[in-house]
Image (cartoon, rainbow, N blue to C red; front, side):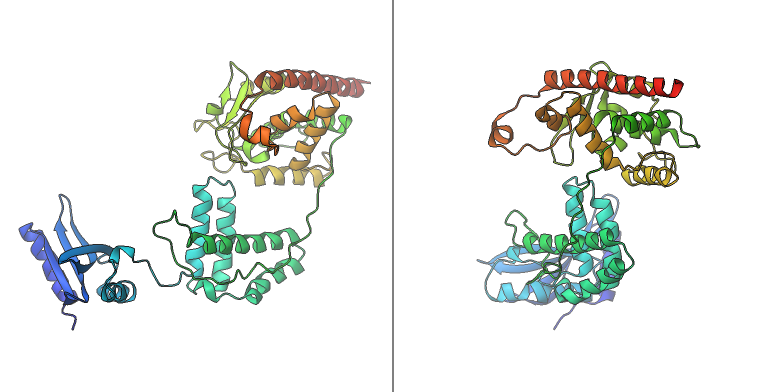
Length: 413
């Protein structure tokens, strides 16, 4: 019968605090069937209390940590010992092979997936975590993840779809499907030494159809481009200045919204006129020489004390988010102050007008950091193409300045 009690543990901790000598408390039968231990040690600044599973193999004791007391209670430690270790010990197998056999919960799965996205430097991890937290609260955060049925996921998505938020509905489906796909793979990943077991047989979101993708085609013609740029220079209503500057840099460089929004002073090489990203959406470093008109704008910006070129209006410790820039454009577009355009359309506009300016598609792709799929580009070509990029941006700079000059003449006429 188990011999350890909470009272005995408390008394032992006080003894160790008083004497400074470590103690090991034992719970269970001992040799043959293993034993649960609580190891109490006096450290320089505190007493540590650690639950350990112990077995004897070839007359030598082997131990494995289970958890820390009191965050793991005596009752919980006994439950985990019998659940995850006792059977291994009776079969003569090493307890070092033990894994947590309790099926992971919905909360475990979604938190684990968000942590995976964060470790992989995915810019979407915060947005994904926020969405998954809401889904977990609806499904039941403490329910075993393997119990979730497809109908339950559908019932979450349907009200979102019916209120007209079709894109959001598809995002929810994607979050759940991706999280479950990660969970099914992670516990079979031989590189992971201590996976959380979910024991999922079927992905509940795998059979839910996706929303048809709407491929954008909108791009600004020359006159629209010039008119928008001039409005951003002198907006007709009060606007947080970093927003208009960020959108102008988007127009002048054709980069992704997230990468421009988060520009830090350490990424700008004023002497070389280069913006450098250590990592980007496609997980590759990226550097571009900017056109001189963009360089002049960046040089005129005084980064805030946190180093951001485009700080958030609400929290200067953070850069403006790409969602805020989208909202800024939508708001003024709906008021009829600027052309009907989104920030993604601006990236498409740069691609199109830069081609019109005479820049080859290959260099435009490289400037916009599009992944090139041919074997030569992926596996062999390590040339930076910086001279070619510089020449292209010089061509683009002349093209943009001519556009803006024509707009000035039109306004003066």
